[in-house]
Length: 404
Image (cartoon, rainbow, N blue to C red; front, top):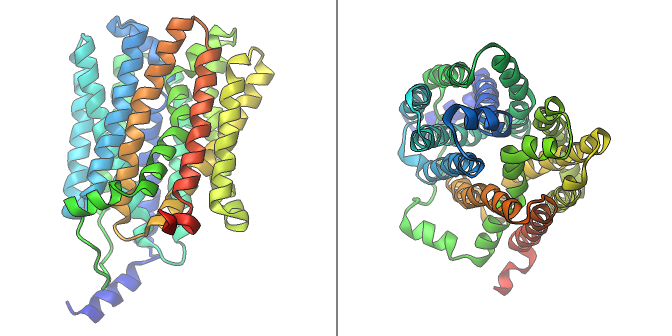
């Protein structure tokens, strides 16, 4: 096929029905994967009871899962150009099926860790494919398609807590996981039949190799941006692991506590798109940092929420903050550091976030055990989130980058 024919095929593919099909499947996959992994707090107690795990062991399971989710997805993102998407998605579906099967037969802490690590790796790989592929199929509607695809991240915490609670009223943890992860695997297998990259244009990107990676991680601005972003998102992983336990300890009804992530996710669906509109008018970096500051303030207030009204206000604040935080970081980073090899750049960012996802819930849990109260751990968390905002803002400041 000649260069002219390739360019023509690409133009016909962009903004086509095929692209919107990929967006639709992406929403479904992100909803199920994000909902299965990041509603951990809803089923943490049942996991502990089923497998006789301590609170620290349960916390470590979530930390390991999210670390594998982000690390596996990040590593795939770095080398994504070396793979065809369809067989990779098929392997992801097989990985999800194996993780489900393992959870039906294991009875030890190590067995649970292996099952959830596999779940995280498979889920993270699917996440990277969905997030990086959807924008490639659009030109005129790229922003809209990307925003719609990313709503799956908000829909997961909105929908899955109610799914878990309904399933737990019918069956126990093991078959409930078989249902949820089984549906997720089925969606991934279906997607493997239609997911592929659009015809490539004439642009050639720099090869992603050791030299490219060294150049990225030796850039102090990029390191500051990656570390800062990891810190700004740390509150989300803490709440995913501990939200229900903290709220019930503060005297909040367990049913209300279990819907906390639904409130955050539901609000973020709207603020995800609204944040993009505001960001285009007042500045994406400014909007992003403002949302992070709001999340930091909510973290400070959260342990003092002892009434339903205050809980709803704080959760609503977290949801407002999550929307712009989850949707604006990618265009900010790619504008600052270039869109060439965008998937690899996003992969490196996810690897940085893996450290935060692994450590933040463990640190908060350890501080809670030492101090026997939740105020100090969340004061520390709020300060960490604020520090992340400063590092991210400095790292993405292109105006003074030439001074380094």
